Amino acid sequence: MISALKTLCEKFNISWRFIKFLFVGVLNTLFGYAVFALFNFLGLHYTLSTLLATVLGILFNFKTTGCIVFKNGNNKLLFRFVLVYSFTYIFTIAALYGFRTLNMNNMYINYALLLPVNAMLSYILMKKFVFLTT
Image (cartoon, rainbow, N blue to C red; front, side):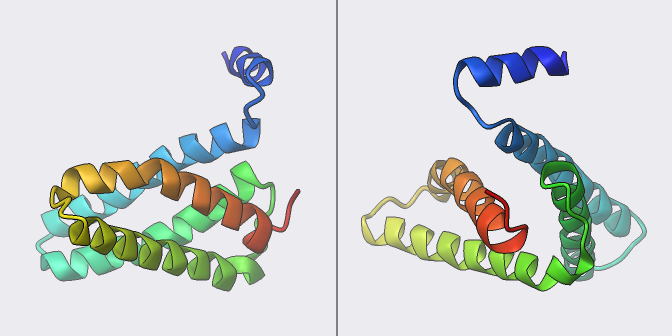
């Protein structure tokens, strides 16, 4: 199955690394939600559950993205990784604000419109700024 996906990527000139990045993103999302749900189930306040899920999620994401996608698990890159997360967060908030100024007030649609942009932006920043690959 993986070889068929790789062949399909080559046929359409799509980076296999980017496809792995998307799959790892799904895995990371599931992990973050599971951590939140677990802490919430254990009776922690939702704000603490969210904080712990975010911190553990970033650490998990750093390892999965680094090791699986970019083949680099160097812990010294964590600060850069967090900077990229911070930048994409600020970009998202600014873009959502921009949508509101254009009277595009449906935040569900606005956020959905930003998903592919954020995926590409974070991939490029991870590739060029965090894991320093070509």
